[in-house]
Length: 233
Image 1 (tube, rainbow, N blue to C red):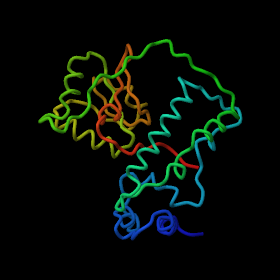
Image 2: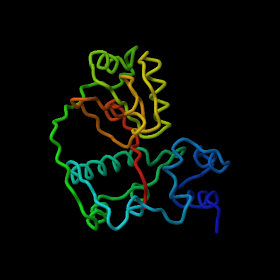
Image 3: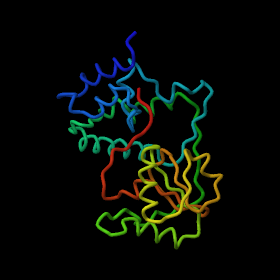
């Protein structure tokens, strides 16, 4: 059996055209350096990947919340759009979406084999106002800072990875915004600080009667970033 590192090098050359020596991803991983975002190259390390449904038992109940059809279609459309934007970066190329993510049709085919329960949302959530980062402003996070100052509710700022959390953490520190950082949502809810920075796959923020959730989608409105989501086939 080939080692994962050997598999990575071979699969990388098969998936991406051009000279791999131009890629910092290829060079660092080949040296055994665990780069930020290495999890999004996982299919290159293994012959086969498992998806989330591989961990479900036969009696698993799927709880559906909101319009899944619309959410999946929107997510896949955004994913393909971002792939087209970043696909030709020779230094840090990205895998095609279908090699890394579950396509909407396969997702629904999989959940249809389980018992499902629709969760009805009784509370109407408000939309997050414009709090986007303005890099032309001497204080890029001024809109976010003003929003937090004027808002008495707890604010959860979510990033999609620990690496992204550190990036946003530095921005908050530079803006003088006080916050507490945690590794995941479950630990964040137990913290009493008004502003909590943590990691979650949620990619759309909202304002509820109890708290505010802000994601990178609200912070980086004018910047197209590669959205990272879980698992592959």
